Structure formats: structure tokens, C-alpha cells
Image (tube, rainbow, N blue to C red; front, side, top):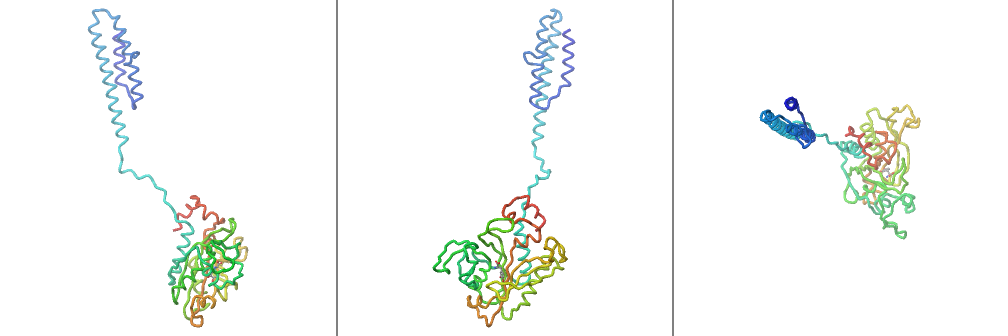
Length: 345
Ligand code: DAH
């Protein structure tokens, strides 16, 4: 019976739900399209007996209006809901931004600078592209010294006839000693952090560039004991108060006497372990009393002044402090490696 069908659809209308445009369109097609259920009832209506036509016609029109209104109402609430979802909630916490980290070399460089600053050392600087005089000659390297050799040094310009006119990438920061003495009279107390270059194949243990910190102190009556005391303080500050140091005789052209310094192994405390090759010691720097020839080359009277110098590799110290096995990691900028230094500031 048509009246039953009208009532059945009416009951359904109250229950209709749709939360997006697609679902709404499906409902419109189901009830109101050409092949829709309500449209079909209008076909049935043609069969209705004439005396019922008035009443049923009214009811049918009513149903169509109801269905249209219901679907329109659902459309409105859909729009409201979408608006609600797009609203900006200013109380929500922001999306976290990944924080950058300082490079391990920068972290350690700063630690070292801080320690020497407390001892009155100031920062000095010099160029990475240098002349032979500042890198070698003024530092008492003989003209035939192997460090000048092509194997070690990157030459920008090479003039075999006149070695002093050669331009190189500095192979150590000791050149800044000379730069500083060029324009400063004693007392001089400086450290110079900087990048240096050597013509080496890149492996886990060697690189064609790395970083050093050079130290220089020149004054009246500076002695080897002063050097030893400063280096002991430095080692304890950097590696912990129980650290011991040991100086072994060595040779550098620019210092006399020269020494290499070991610190007690930071892993086993000096007992001997795989890391320190069971010696209890690891080497960390070179040092010595500034050779009088170096003072004289820079116009400082070596009968009045004396001084000490030291030089260390920042990568080397970083390896010892943070157990980095492969030098290449410092220049590859792999964020997974760099992220590990998040807390090392
Ligand atoms: N310049 C040396 C090098 O690159 C390191 C060094 C050793 C610096 C002894 C010094 C020093 O000032 O006294 O291997």
C-alpha cells in the first residue's frame, strides 16, 4: 500500500546521518533522484483510486519536502562541522622543531679555549693560506726539512729557486706564533685554534684537514716548570682531577728542549687496557721551550726573553673524550652522529 510506504520512508528520514558531501549525495540519490525511492512513489501514485488521490497526493508532497529539508539540514551541519575542524586551536602545543647541535669539534674547541682563558691566554688568529716564512722558515725549519716536502704540504705556489716565496696551506697553527710576534712585543700569552692542511690520503686515522690549537707564552723568566704546571692544570680540567701527565723528550725544530705529553688513560685510569695499548698512557700534544732562533727571527731578544709553546690536535682530543673511532665522521656531517652530541654543550 502506498500509504505504508510513505510512512516507512518518513520514519527512515528521522534516522538519516551523513558526515561528508559524498554521503549526502548518496542519500539524495537514494531518495530524490530520478530512480530514487520517493520518485518511485510518484509512479505508484498514478495507480491510486481517484477518491484517495487528494489525501495521498498531499502526503506524498509532504514526504518529498521533508526529505529535501532533512538532506539540506544535514548539509548545513556537515559544513558547520568542517568549519569547526579547520579552526585553529591556539592552546595546542606547537609542532616540535628539531634543534640543531654544535659540532663535536666546536664543543671541544670551546672547552679548551675556556680552560686556557682562565689562565690568562687570549685568542690569536692567522691566515690558512700562508707563506713559507710563517709556516717554516721563521720556525727554524731547515731549508731541506722533510715537512716542506710536497708529500706533506699543499703548495698554492711553489718556487724551487727561492723557497721563502712559496705559498702553502698552513700545515700547523704554529704559524700564528710568528704572526703574533710580528706585531706584538712580549709578554705574549696566546692560544690559536684553527684549521690546518696536510697532503694525506683520507682514512679513518688521517685526513687532509684537521684542527689544532697552538699555545705560546713569552715573557722574562719563563721556564719549563711553568709549561709543565700549565699543562697539568689543563689535563686535569679537561679529563678530570685524577688525570696524571708525563713528558717524553721529543724533537720539533721550533722548540728546545721539546717534549710530547701523555695523559693517564681516561678509560682505565692508568692501569693499562686495550685502549692505551696496555701502557696506561695516551699521547695528546707536543710542546717545548721556544727555540732562541725562533725568538730572534721575530726580533725578540732571546737573552732577555724566554717562552714555551705547545700544540694539540682537536680531533685527537675529541676522539679521546668521546671515543670517536673514525676521523672521517667529523667532516661527513651525518646528523645521526652529530645528534649524539646533543648534551655535550
Ligand atoms: N706544530 C706541531 C705539529 O703540528 C705541534 C707542536 C709541537 C706545536 C710542539 C708546538 C710545539 O707549539 O711546541 O705537529
